Length: 567
Image (tube, rainbow, N blue to C red; front, side, top):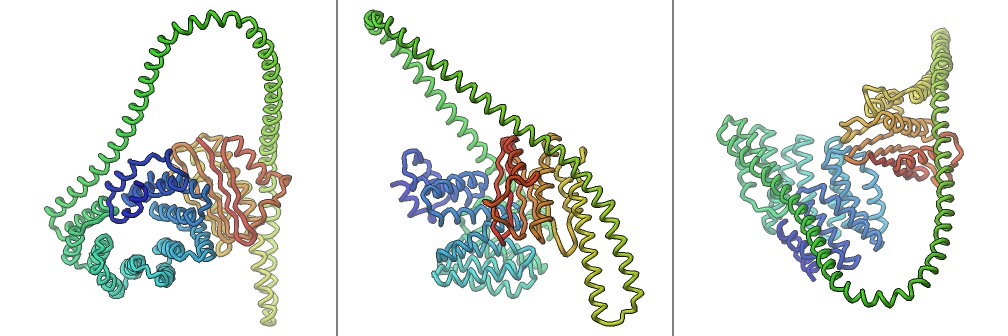
């Protein structure tokens, strides 16, 4: 009943009111469908108040519940929000692009227009900084879809985004203002103050671009008067920071200090809220423990009262004890024998597993030596031959006298092929021969190998580190590097990719590696587990580190390999 009431009123409530509703609900006392909604509302509430970490945790719980319910619309919807969180967290667009591509395919297949609109809008958001024209193209596509379902609010949001792209990315402020003016007319009728706030803060940004600082301040002051439900505190922090900066530019330092103080006060409130939340969690744990102790004390008291009764019963039970112990003794002997057989079986299984892992380690060590030998042979022998071949060919080309256009074209193409072969051999040699340098660490080693194997206009290799400030244990760094190196070499040799992205993310208790290529892909089920080092042995090594190893690949659609290792 409470959840239904929240669902009906959610858009009208502020953060505190939403949390108040949610705290009345115990997720253990509701069915799976209601639990999915409960987690989803909790996630949205935290996200709308800029608590991204807490929101992500609840989004993942909601996603698990929706998967159990086979509600794939909601699963995809949550994937879009995860992509949005990554976009706001300064992840590269390429690192979450696959989530949005899958969402577009799914939404079109299911004819789910709201889901398609959200996805197209998020793709536009991801392209704003690098490809603003393409961003507008996707926003326009989303608007066309929104018209079909007459979603005026979404169309207003999309026009605001288009205005920002024109004004701040393409420096076409006149066109940006036209979009803002059209949206403002609609918002004044509907009294949507949240979106109006974005209109005026964007207008202030356009004024600052034009050097009209007084006009910018007027728009900021209007923004400050508008009441907001969502993102209120964090929005005000940004607003007061911008106002303080603008007053500094105007040399009005008194006002600059005043608004900077307001910003600091709000930041304190957020910190205090986070502290209060932590204290509340500690109190809850303490009260739970106290209740457990109280229950134990009551049990002990109850046990004392029962002892007298049990004493009388005990006298009777003595007569049965002899028979009981005899049966118990026989059963215990059987159980001990059974446990010993089980232990022997487990020991044998552990020995076999350790033997298998030892064999993999030996294989890796042997292949490490072989890798260096192959790298040196490639670089010193075949590389030198190709370099000499190209020089001789160019001399022959110059002596030929360019007898015809056809011959000239043939010479040029052949020269390009020799150069490409040389670059590929050189790239493979570097890929095989690179290593983790002790004082530089994993990230630097991966960045070095990326630079070495990249081929201008042929192959781009991008490394995206996140949270990798602390060094790992050297043996683990070497192991992870060799895994990345092997996967990278496979991509160069077999995938025919033009772009490879390596994402390295370190949390407090794990490290995540994602390697994506846009190559030809392959059928994972048909993978041969006996191909040298191969992906199978990387998977075994990851298992030895108590990690997980996943391959996502389809023929013609590239490959994504995800490795998670606990620290």
